[in-house]
Amino acid sequence: MADEDLPPEGIQTGLPQDPANFDADPRVSWSRLDNKFILETEEGNEFEWDTALKRWIPVLDQTLLDQQSQIYRVPGVDDDATTTVQQKKKRKQPNGDESGSKPKKARVNTAVYVTSLPLDADQEEIQHVFSKCGVIAEEIDSGKPRIKMYEDDKGQFKGDALVVYFRPESVDLAVQMLDDTDFRLGEQGPAGKMRVQAADFSYKSQQDAPAKTSNKDKKKIIKRTAKMNAYVRPIRRRPRLISCSKLTDWDDDDPQTLNETSSKWDKVVILKHMFTLQELEV
Image (cartoon, rainbow, N blue to C red; front, top):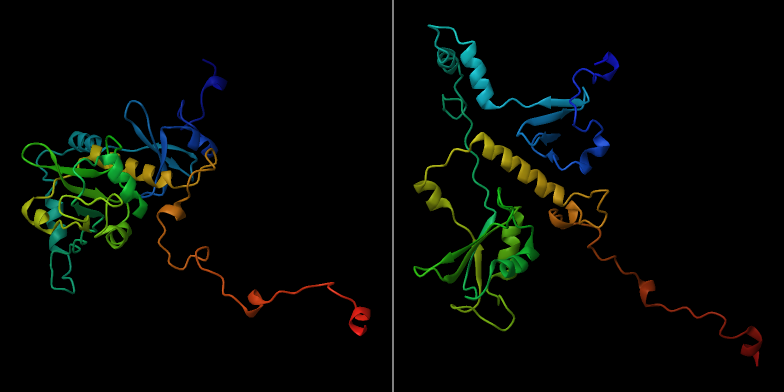
């Protein structure tokens, strides 16, 4: 092969090199966590777009890093010894905790628990009603709305459901708008009107040990989150797509929703050319 036929150094063949063409490639998605474009090939390899170098950079998997560390491992040297020394050098925190670890953030609730739903209601109807209060989250693998319908011992729907939203602000809005109302106009559920309340995960979090998330699941979560954000992001190829501010912004002072202040001239009507001065003198 001639030298002129070789691709430039660092340029991967078969990957888009112009950011203007990223939206047209289904393998490319925008990561809101890393603020960069990511690309996943059919073989499962993942790349990140380097804006400075203007090329795709392979993302190293944790398994590959472990393999590399085993290759360069020195016999008789404990790799964990460095960690022990570093822990001894940690300063005592102001709160008296010598571990130096930051306190865990409280879990943000994005779900509502619904009771007294009609026994013949289905997931699509529940999604239609509760999507009026915000965007409903999607499952990582299937992309279906995260709506769990609870069944009794006989496998029949008992009128309870868990609806998970994409944003926590939707929880308060759903409680305010839908609690103590009719799921269907003029029709009540098994226990009367529908009841909507914020889901309580405190007991479950205390009883169940948190499951560790694998690297594969982390990639799926990042990809699904990027897709949810991209769903509400305006795209040139789909100008009719709802913008992000319409679905996820919760600004009560949106100037588009505020009525203009009325003035005294709103009640005044001016009539012109009704008569002449000569007609007044007659």
